[in-house]
Length: 150
Image 1 (cartoon, rainbow, N blue to C red):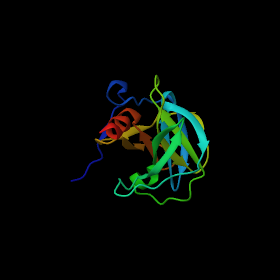
Image 2 (cartoon, rainbow, N blue to C red):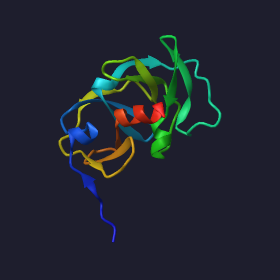
Image 3 (cartoon, rainbow, N blue to C red):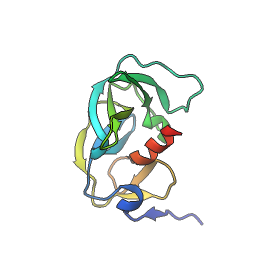
Image 4 (cartoon, rainbow, N blue to C red):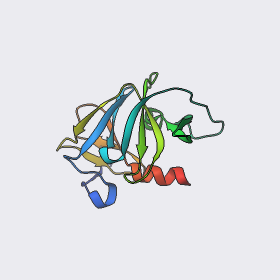
């Protein structure tokens, strides 16, 4: 017997809660929500150097403010069809500089997380959302930052 297990919104556990403001970007066949506090800016994509032997969702490295930062493709991580990205979203901790660049099909827009949205049970930094009109994923940026440090 297979049952869908859904996590109740828990700001302490995941940072996710319905109604919070997030940047919604489109990438391939899906949408991704990035918490507003972690979004630094949207930038054009240029000069990405590919990395051998990296995770398949790490597209390469780019330089921002004189520092190399990883370029990530969430559509590859989610296992959905992707297209050619045209923009990148710089992510950084609320009190520090940028640490990653997430590719997108455009600049996206800020929205409130729908009241009906619920996280599927998972132990990853990319979590599928239920209760959204289109296929949507939540990026748990704090967990991603911790994984990139390892």
